[in-house]
Amino acid sequence: MENIMGDFTITALDSPESLESIRTVFPEEYQARKHQFRAEEHFAKKEYQKAVAEWTQSIRFCPQSAVYFTDRGNAYFYLEDHDHAIADYTESIRLDPRYSNNYAYRAYSYLCKKNYNRAIEDSNRALKFDKKNADAYATRGQTFSAIGQYSKALKDLNHAIHLNPDEDEYWFERGKVYEAMGENSKAIDDYEKALSLKPDTEDYQKAYDKMLRTKVMN
View 1 (cartoon, helix red, strand yellow):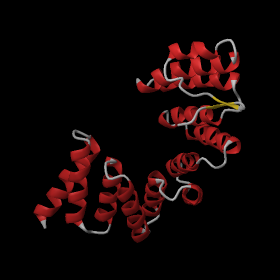
View 2 (view 1 turned 60 degrees about the vertical axis):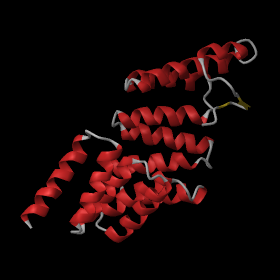
View 3 (view 1 turned 135 degrees about the vertical axis):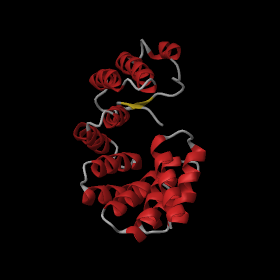
C-alpha cells in the first residue's frame, strides 16, 4: 500500500530504523510514521484499541494522509465500532476518492450494520474503480444473500473466488448461499474447501458438520 504523507510519497521506509533518513527533513512525517509502526505492531497482536490510539497520533501529525484514516478505520472495524470505521473510511475517501478498497471496506461495515442499500452502493463504487476487487464482489454477494437474492449472491461470490481462490471466507460464504438454496452437496464441498484453507475454524466446522448430518438424514 502506498503511504502518502501530505504532498510527499515516502518510499523504502519499511522499518523503524529507516525512519532516521527523514527525521530532520520531514519531522512531521517522521513522527507520523513512528506512530504508524507502533500501530502496525499492535494491530498484528490484535491490540486494536492501542492501534487506534497510535494511528490517531499519526493523523495528528499528517491529517491529509488518507492511508492513516483507512488503517484506523480497519482497527475500528475489528473492534466492531462500525460507526467510527465508516467515518474514517469516509474521510479517507474524501482525501483519496479513487482508492477502491476504501469503498469495499466501508461497504462491509454497512453490511455489518444491516444497511444493505449502502453496502451495495459502496461495493458498486469499489468495482467502478477496480473491476478486480475481490472483496467488493464478496461483500456485495453477502449483501445479496442477506436480502434473499441468492442468484445474484452466487454470481458475485463466484467472481470473488475466481479472483482470489485462496480466501477461505469466500468459499464459506458461497457455501452458506448454496445451503440457503437447498444445494447441500455444493454447500458441503464449499465448507470443506474453506476448512482446508483455514483448518480448525469453529464456524466452518459447525457448518460442515451440520450439512453432513442433514445429508445423512435425507
